[in-house]
Length: 420
Image (cartoon, rainbow, N blue to C red):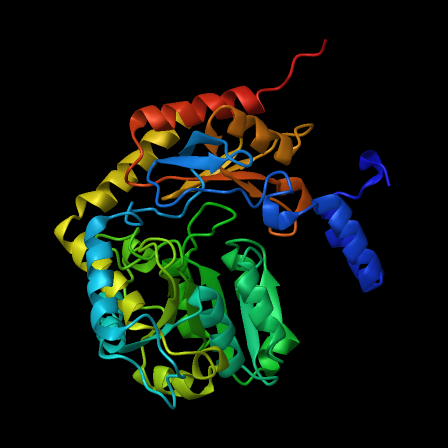
């Protein structure tokens, strides 16, 4: 099959379910090449670690090039901080590299319990639990444990993919509302599904990773109380980046401790691995510890992860200027982008760009990389077909010169091309 006849990744995703597995594998191999060797343009790049605002990319067998890194979720610049590394090394020396059993039967380390107590205190909940497998596993565990076929789940249409996967693990009936449209959410409570539901759960994100804006947590709370529902906030991107103390988007909106459940990850602001759930009611955590299968049937979190997160939280208490620097960078970026005329959305620390009509998102990505700017693609099925583009993530380490370079490159790549 000639290159021009190959399906695009989008077409393969749309049409793949109609094909037998052997045909899907054949077409995917022809399209993607050797993925493990970085064979698919725009994905699976080789990045040298650790890095800060500047990263080195592999360009071949031995080649490298430096780029400005706007594609990592290291929002507070902690991934290469030597103080975190020292705490982790000390934890490994004392406690070993991992755990060898599940939390229900094997137990959990004292550092993990200390971390859970710190998380609950920071976010204003009664208790918390730490998952080894990140916010993804936490969302799956919460939805499958707390909802049944007798319940209704109301959710924003822009929820992360892990949420939709979580819905597949429960028989709860789902009612989706347009992004941040609380008027439609209110109307959905008149739906027969909602009326017949035994329990009701509303789900939204604190910072929507694909849209680059905030969920309307504070405005949703009256609906939560009125309809005797529970509110779940996925604050993967807001944890430690939002709010005066880093408690997240709810704190930023003045309602710290009000969501019934807050889910987050350690893979972004603290630059390690794992995730958590904080609950207003301790009874919810007690229940989840037994019935959230992604927790009870997964290996217990190792001490080294807890030590890294605790070190990051300690460091951010000592250096609140890191969060202030992140916000200052975001405000500066918005100011510089205001005059470009390009469609974008931004809430610290995310800037989402939509590719204008006639501009291929992957080609734009390639063009930015050629200009020394590393960003991430935002493609279907993560977003609707007409909303594709790319996303830049800012960190506390970026300089104004870095942001100027990003804006200049975006201006050049997304500018309408004059007809010849």
